Length: 276
Image 1 (cartoon, rainbow, N blue to C red):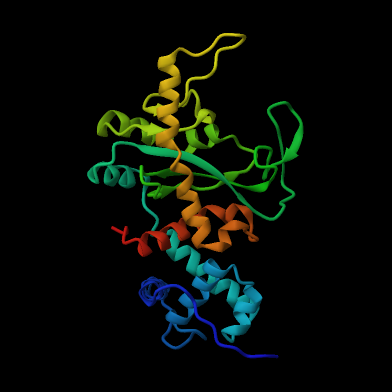
Image 2 (cartoon, rainbow, N blue to C red):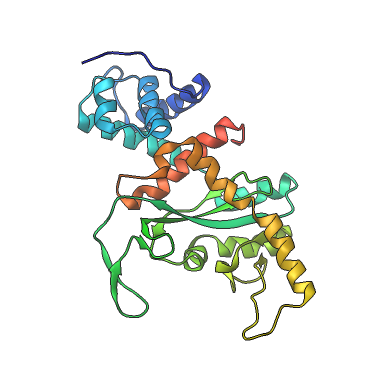
């Protein structure tokens, strides 16, 4: 065994913020003082190492002097307390309007995960893997998000299986609120062609006509402007996955992807001073 020192490239302020959340959770549970192996701060460091480095939980537990089972339990607590701080959808839309945003961008991403053998029936009556995405050609969970014009994500949704289409997931988690934002806040949403037919307030590209017909110049201009404004929506997910490496391939149960992404969003909001 070779021992070595390492630096974790997150701020002490972020670890202290997470430590306060964990301390509040311990008080809520009635945990007795000094009954845990790790202090709240050390537990926060364990969780941040997992998010930032995608470190193996068994190795994390060994480094912190706890058992593998305790390491997983501590990590579950970190994810839970962070996910509880994730912004509410309506609050995020109201803040976007208060911040003077002219629109928000709706997009979805398949977060890669280990294979899950759960089966379901497709629309064509065939048995398929519930968590396999034909679009991404891999197993994972579908998470919808809103992004501002600057590419920063203010909100992410709960996860749905990778086999579910973006529009179906959006109808379940976000479209109702977007209709409200369009009518009450005058805050429209921009989306790609996969959301065609989403409804009022959600602007999507105009489809190319069938046959030899071509789009009118006004419609082509509309599509070009929409693409130019919407392209930064891809940056929102890149901010999350680039900073928190554990999001690049999630090895826990796919059903937990939503909470993990929400937790990463809260960490990102803290680092960018976006927490309410």
